[in-house]
Amino acid sequence: MVNREEVARLAGVSPMTVTRVVTGKGYVSERTREKVMEVIDALGYIPNKIAAGLVSGKSNRIAIVVPDLSNPYYLQVVGAMIDEAKNYDYVVSVYKASEAELPQVIESLISNRVAGVVNYASEFPKKYEKHLNDIGAKTIRTSYFSGEFSMELEYEDAMRKAIDSLIEKGAKKIIFIAGMMTEFVSIDQRVPFYKKYLKEKGLEVGEDSVVYGNYPREEAFMVGYNAAMQLVKSGCEFDAAFCMNDMMAFGVINGLRRMGKRVPEDVKVIGFDNIQMSAFFEPPLSSIYVDTRQEARFYFDYIVGNPVDYERKLVASYVERKSAD
Image (cartoon, rainbow, N blue to C red):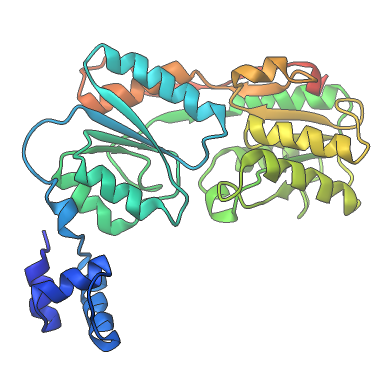
């Protein structure tokens, strides 16, 4: 692992100067600071407060990193993880992290020698992967395209049933309110299947069929609320909408109401996650459901190294309620 002394040697300064640059305490000329930062970036150096956590010993801490604490889906997974952890004397901690906050959170995880990390936030910067490996942390979804953990998530059958139901009820223009930036949507299987199946059914899939947004930088409810109002204001005609999660769907329903639209009479709405409050919303929300307890079990068994005799596969199901009636 790169240490402070190596950074100092390559930058031609003292170790104390490196400390001053990293902590922001004490005087360092701007030219020297820039030189030290260039070396730090080139080497992927992480300050000693984190390196101090790289010691031997078995950790019993599992961290779950989420982008948004207002989404109950994450809390359902956390609750299921806690239930699993009680059986093995493990501790589960939750960290909220925006993209900008993520480096500080990761450094805290490394410093505290977590046994594992379940990530729902932005992709972890590459420079931290080695440090997480050094402390023996098992990681899940810290990188979108690599990692030892794999889990098959099957949405197709549930989405097919939902789309068929919408068509049977007369829907002709079904949109997908992804609410996320394009780079996030590109790694998700739901939008590609939505486009594929609508084309198979002979329905229109145009440039306005998928609505992007700023989630998770903004809360899902507000992303959905604003997206719905903007769609109506722009004159976009649609009679059904998938939403990336249930909280976004709640926002969409409220935004449609604000614009004088009725759900489900004018627009039918379907969410994903089937969080508990979906059944009690008005109207009750139709949703694509995945078993969060099984999901949590997969994560926990992988992190603690439990022997398993099952295939890590989650098959979603469609729960139809009044919002898509």
